[in-house]
Amino acid sequence: MMQTQVIAAKPSHVEHDEETFHSLLDLQHRRCLQRGTAFHLLLCRLSTPDGAQLPMTASVRRALVSAMGESLGETDQIGWFLQDLVLGALLSSSDASRCAESNTSERNYIRGHIASRLANTYPSWVIQFYDFLDLPRVRGTAQICSLASPW
Image 1 (spheres, rainbow, N blue to C red):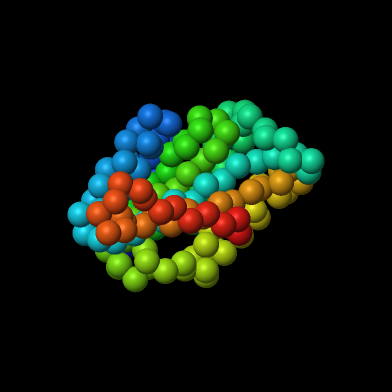
Image 2 (image 1 turned 135 degrees about the vertical axis):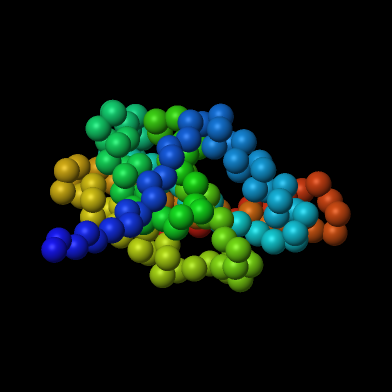
């Protein structure tokens, strides 16, 4: 008698275009304002060693989106912050402490996974990562504090 084994595949992430991704960011921002929580936005771009931005070809986009998608959680979102130039990941979490504090091991895992996937194919390119923590309003003012730090 033959046994069948079911293997659950890791869900693949949908790659959102720039307009859709910005809408998701706006929605998440409004949710966090209501809850008084924060969220992380990770941005990734490719450049030459001298710092010039590289527009991404179709194969580079596929490789980057695939690598980022493999390293994110099920509820995280991927999309273009700037179409074909800057790829973003919206890290959503039900754990408020994860959003409020920087999770270094998770960021290092994402960064390392993307770098390892692209380094062999594109060894002369520089992968730049930026981490934004979006914080809720302070004392009812309209100003939103966003902190950015390169990895």
